[in-house]
Image 1 (cartoon, rainbow, N blue to C red):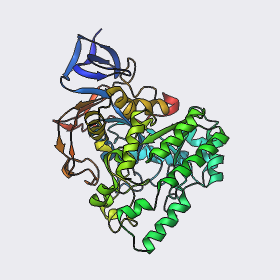
Image 2 (image 1 turned 45 degrees about the vertical axis):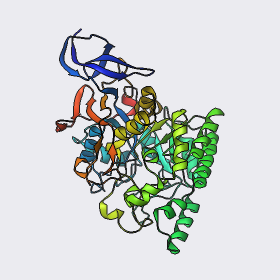
Image 3 (image 1 turned 60 degrees about the horizontal axis):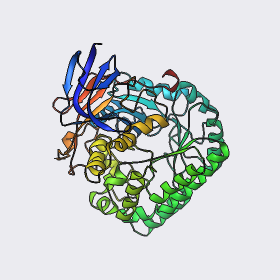
Image 4 (image 1 turned 90 degrees about the vertical axis):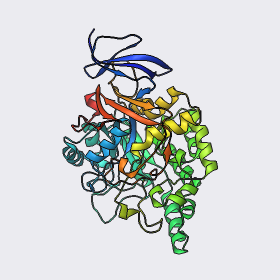
Amino acid sequence: MSYDLIIKNGTVILENEAIKTDVAVKNGKIAAIGSGLSGAKEEINAEGLVVSPGMVDSHAHISEPGRTHWEGYETGTRSAAKGGITTIIEMPLNQLPATVDRESIQIKFDAAAGKLSVDAAQFGGLVSYNLDRLHELDEVGVVGFKCFVATCGDKTIDNDFRDVDDFQFLRGAEIISKFNDSRVLVHCENASICDELGREAEAQGRITAHDYVASRPVYTEIEAIRRVLYLAKVANCPIHICHISSPEGVAEVTKARNEGQDVTSESCPHYFALTTNQFEKIGNLAKCSPPIRDEANQEGMWEKLFNGEIDCLGSDHSPCPPDMKAGHVFKAWGGIAGMQSCVDLMFDEAVQKRGMELPLFAKLMATNAAKIFGLKHKGSITVGKDADFVFIKPNSPYELKAQDLEYRHKVSPYVGRKIGAQVARTILRGETIYDINTGVRETPIGQFILKHQQ
């Protein structure tokens, strides 16, 4: 057989092992895996590189349309490509209008036309005002529905995202449970307690990073996780807990899973790469919610990650203009710009520093998210899947500089950090979309992925 591309001599991460072998590509799909493959129009020598499935980032905020001055499709997906991400699943908030029905998701599709450097699936929103339109989003082909039980959205803007109360969550979960291959995703923090603790701290002049973290204590995450797990069980709805920040929160998911509930979980690189003390030094660029916690909490999270209790890692890339990070911590926007650094950071911190096996790394960064959200052609180096790869150069330390970033705003809590591994190449459906020597491909080839069209 003749091939379009053969990747030779790399350490290839398969589902249950990592071996030195070749991978052949034809018509954008993985066509063969094995030693000594030949007969391709193009060969890439991956000697000394780790060849992993392209990252599936299941938690990305692109703020176009409506807030394109925060982040746009062009800059956001270019940063994904440079960071070894080949598929993002885009969250339904930060853009205006929020993605809550057929009309609003079409506005998003139109805004992205010709701008996607990577492939993109979509989450729809479950908000206080769209229970009668959830079916529209399912019909379009979203792969899940995101909601907040923490306070969110600008209440002065009619079409912004909104949190849900317990009844709205229950009713929404009942509706979503009737859709094929879907689940509800939840931001879990107790809204009233976090809001009141934050108001108290600000009124008393307690406005350090440590004070912010103290205003969103672990118990507010645990309580919210317990509550939504129970209500999702009542509704018989599969559920995904987003960006868990504490080992106690992970333990709640594990307990429910062991009792037979259909529940999956996500955490984020920043909970493993940053601590509260670093947050204090870096400043508001490291503010997010749930917040960055202390070293003991982080060590507990590493234990949960290594023993398989956390299903996947998503960036929760949620940038904003720099002026929204000004002022004291309670006034600043809560979101981290980190998509471009996920693969580099986690390969360095998990694999190189802590000895994580390569198959587990690939599961956390790609395979599990693709399985959870039904991306049938993504997430693993398997014959018949899309030819999506990231080449990682191990033991290649560099200091991240602002000018290296593809984001609309060249800011990130990781600027100035020394990172010990680098993405060397990103390949989407057999085409190189990023090369460390030549940069991001100028002609975007990304596509939207809709559930019913796979």
